[in-house]
Image (cartoon, rainbow, N blue to C red):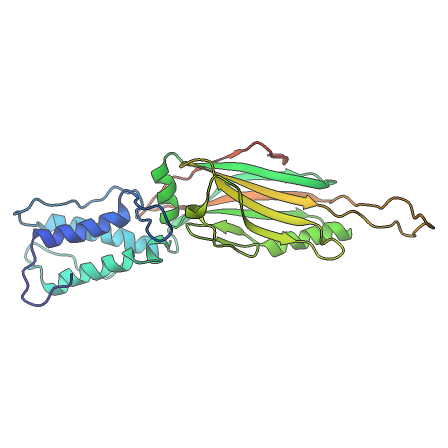
Length: 307
């Protein structure tokens, strides 16, 4: 609660500020994309005993924790008073600290990751050689060391990213349509509350259940409208997510050119040429402010890609 000029600021007020920053920097709490908090970091500050005088060092520690949270979210350090031993903790100083804590505690700020506060980590790449058809699946798991690390990873702005590409320079119409589908799909990226790419969805980490849900998709265009890319995800446990990238080529083919006389003969269904790649990367929160371990990525049952 904001202070007015002349108000006494005591250890209970300090403890209130420390409790609030601990919710953001400390052990994760909550289970939805609106009440989740916590980066699972070790704090410099801690509660002080009732009746004690708050020292300069304790204010420095609190300032450090606030600065780390703010810098992680915005990419730059905040303007915050460095309390010296000679200073009296005024309403102005207290309110400044409280306002900054309110800022980093807000939604969506507490789930935001600033420029320079993350590293793109290689996860896994699966490939299909030229000449595939039917349904092909890149299926993989993402496993965290603990339930709290999974929460902290997404709370701190971490994401899981999927990129599909097809290396081909010829003129085969079906293959070029698959190239277009993958390009239009874009980067599929799941964060704490939603997925972007492939039309997007409102399904994020906290929405995943034990049943596969489609988080992104892209369809082919006529005459290949039967073809489809589908990305699905589920939570196998509190520590493991599983993703299924399905490339389904249901095109039934076309008459040969030139077409023979009736009954025309069998339809010709072209294979997809070139090299198809499915690349998984992790946007991991890193740095001296907030650092969360990256999960491990492994092949799952049902995978047909070469990894």
